[in-house]
Structures are given as structure tokens and as C-alpha cells.
Image (cartoon, rainbow, N blue to C red; front, side, top):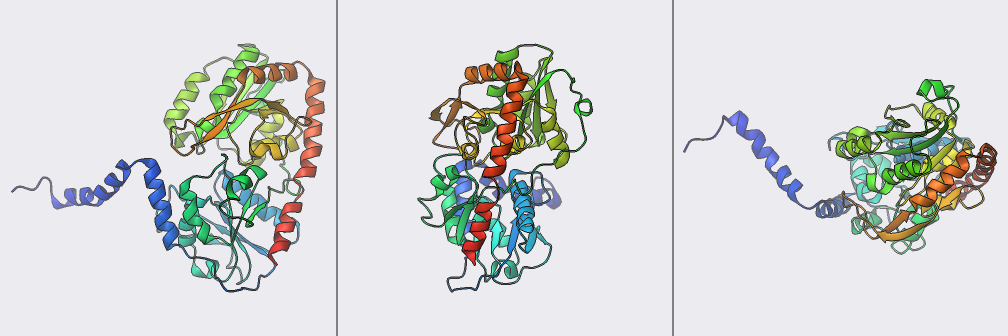
Length: 409
């Protein structure tokens, strides 16, 4: 029998065959099996009483432009503002890094200092497996989790045994998790009043935006769910409000377009209009805030948000916001400080099979009316933006973080 190819050519095929078979399994089944296996292997919090020391060890994608990376950075900065000792642990991306890639810690926190992992439940056991035992032993383990639907999926359950408690950014996420962890869920939103967004000096000219136009900004990350962020509805609302008017500009700030090239290609096709701009550059945080500061209106017709960090930051920058009136963003948004869009709950249709159950379908026609009203009235925009700034400073003042830390010691 003649072997096809040389041994050097055949060996990679042998090694890749299990991976190929794994990839042929349905995505939901792969996620469930992965979560169960890593949840079984991951270290568990000690059942014996451990004296809790003042301080906070914060683990997350601290050097990556992601939502959880940003919440980890914000929590570390806010804790320092409160005078709390902080140790930071930079985790590799759970999706794209090799299993042998380890973590980077500023220094090892002493035993008893609580560890907060800004990693959602399905990937939290893997993060624990990658951490040195000196970081995971003899301390409370806290998951910082966000979810954008009324119920969490089954692949979240294996991580429940890996945490002492869970902190969440909104009451919406808390309601989804409380049935699984009764009495162990705390609402701890980002303390943005302690570490507010600061814009760089970049102006409209730096972004190629006309000075006299009314600029509407939609900002989202393609590493998150394209369907959930719902940019096509935002484009439809903008087009319904303004058509091709050259003095009305829509800016689509798209993070990580390489993560979902097919989705980005569809978006680029839909955005082919003279008054729609695509901004795909990786911007430093202060430049990203400068882009928000250049906008007149920030728009989000999301189908679900665990919190809505982009919206909260825009409000702190004094921007008028038009957004779906459902899910985590309603913790800090209401009819007095934002233009909330009506919605109906419909079965989720998610190409990536991550979201199941019901989510919001916002009324794009109503959003178009709100956009047109705000665009035509600069005084209304300024008044709404100022109410947004003042109320968000009050609602995200860090009291929940302080209470959570006091509850640990």
C-alpha cells in the first residue's frame, strides 16, 4: 500500500483531524461541552473561611480593546481613586490565544485579597486554569459578568461552582442571574463618575467631518454580536430621517472589522451613501472620546445591552442619546435624560447562535422622528445632553463599588 504524501506531509493532517471533527459539531454543542469540561477542571473557591484583606485583584483583557477589557480598566482606576490597593492581572484573549499563553500580573496579590475576573461565565473556568495557583488560592473569587438577554444560556452553569459571588453592571443582568445564584449577585456598574471619559484635542477636521453638519454617531465592536448591535436599523433610521442631506452625517465607528469580515462587508454595502462615513481605525481611548465629543447625537438601536458603556460615556460627555429603551442601559437612561425608542420583544435570530430567547426589536421609524427632531433643534440637544451629563454623574458615582468592597471584608 502506497502512503499518500511523505511523513512530514501526513503528520499535520493527523494532528488537525480531531480539530476538524470538533469544528464540525454544532456551535452550541461545542460551547456547552467546552464550558462543562473547563468548569470541571478549574479550581474552586475554598470552602473554609479565609480572612479577607482590604484590596482588589482585577483580572481581565487589560491591554485589549474590548468591552470587558474596558470594564476591568475602569474598575482598577476607580478602586485606586477610592484609595483601595489594586493588583492587576492581564489575561490573554480566551478566543484567539494559544492554551499555553500565560497571564501577566503587576505582582501577586497577598492571600485574602479578593480576585475579580472580568470574564463572562463560559470562559471564566479557562481563565482560572491559566492563572497561577498563588493567584487563585485562599481568596474570594468573583466573576464580573454581563448578559444582554433575560435568561442566561446553559453553558453558563458550569462556572457557578467556580465563584464565590458575581458582580454585574446592571439590574437587567442581575435579574437573569439571580435565579442561578440566589443572594450572591451584586449590581456594581462602572464607576464612571470617578473616572469620567476625557477627550483628546482632535476636532472634526481631524476626523474629516464638516463643521456645520449635524453628526450622528453609532459606535460598536464587531467582536461582539452584529445582530445584537443592530447597525442596519440605525442606518435605516438615519436614512429615514435625512435621506442624502449633506448637512446630516452618520458616522459608523466599527471596532475590530477583521473579526467578522462577512458582517463588515454587508455593513459597508449598506453604508454606501454620500452622507455615511465608516471609521474603522483603532483609536486610543482619548481619541475615541474625542470622536464622541465631535458628534451631536449618539444612536444605539441595540436589541439588548448588559450595560451600555458607549452610551454612558456619551452622556457623561454631554451628548444627546437616542437608544432602545430596554435592557441594561435603562439603569442610567430614562425619559428625562435620553430619547428612548419604543420596541417589541421578538424571538432572537442570531447567526452565531449565541443569543436565544427574546430580545428587543426597536422602532426604527420612531427613531427617525427623534433624530429629525433633535437635529433640527440645537437648544433641545444641548438641554438633553446637559441633563444626561448631570444625571449620569449622580447614578454612576461608585457607591455600589464601595458597598461591594465593604461587603467582602
